[in-house]
Length: 291
Image (cartoon, rainbow, N blue to C red; front, side, top):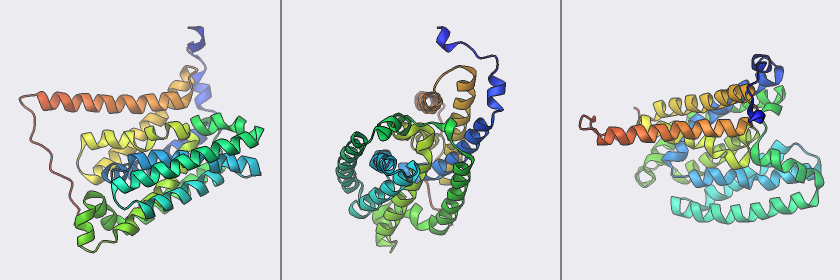
């Protein structure tokens, strides 16, 4: 296929300023997704995390309609949806009901806003599939500030958030404010989704926030190690996607998602082989809170 011909000038493409912004944004996204991806898996909130990106859709299209920044509208709607889901869904089953209800309304509202504005309709492809190559330096700075705030907040609520994530019933019996932790988790996740969407869009954000964390969970049971592994896998997927898309004219979002999914599939296959091996190691202990 001539459309996928190798580009001999790919090194020049990688040295461009827009690529530098994309690489920097990828690092910021990997930090945030690596930390929150683990909690998303541990709290059985993968559907909620996926839905938050779609809940932000009417905010993005509404922002275009009003002439406001897309990220501001998406962040506002994602945060509002996160607070509603967090407040109404204390348990996983309750979160699914609340998430589905809010998601259905938000999707309809997003399509309504898109129909009201030609500019919003034209922005839909970028919102749905992302455009990491158009990220600006100011956005990168905003991502870095968000990461710093995220790490600070997580360090302050680490033990109660981790405890409630691993066993919310025991945590509640021990006096941990599980409802507050649930709302805090959803609010932080809304911010992570908002900074991840510019890279891969609302439809593919699952591949950055959840898939690397699911892969890391297969590789290690330790929460800190799982977060580190998740962040590294996310970073490799983003940077690898950028490099490959510079070498071959493919959409970066597609390559990023493909790499992330490939890592997950390889980890699953490796785990299945180890389980069937007669020399397999003993089962890993369940993750515990660090003292």
